[in-house]
Image (cartoon, rainbow, N blue to C red):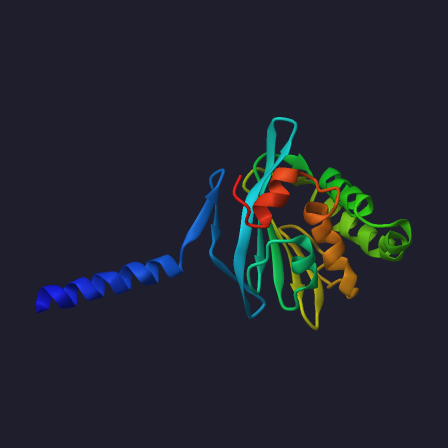
Length: 193
């Protein structure tokens, strides 16, 4: 009888441990769930951004529930998070420029022109940091009722971006028709490589 109880306890422990699973991508651990300012989000997918043959950063996408298409992700209500961990040192103002270009490459000109003030402010956030080193992380959160919050280690500007379309414009850098990295797009959408 005691062996049976011990076996049940062990099964319960294994199940509990799997509930707190994590995914490791290029040495970067992504927890199975994230607390996005009080709302629970689950890891949808994670992968690596390559530039030529070089690993630039590891990224993870957290959503209220799993989604496998960009349209599902963009239309989904609730808290969302994109978390990025640098795999190499980079001039952060250059990263801000690349993100700005990624937004522009995935939107029509009229929609992009409406977001120019936000895109410029985002670029400034990264410029203020000067440099992001390998191992540094930052987050881009969508917080319903608040807006888009970009959390970078050295950013002075923590004021949310109020435009509801701004977060989706940023997500299109990775999930849009011209993503930064096609393999990363698939990985963030939970598709095996």
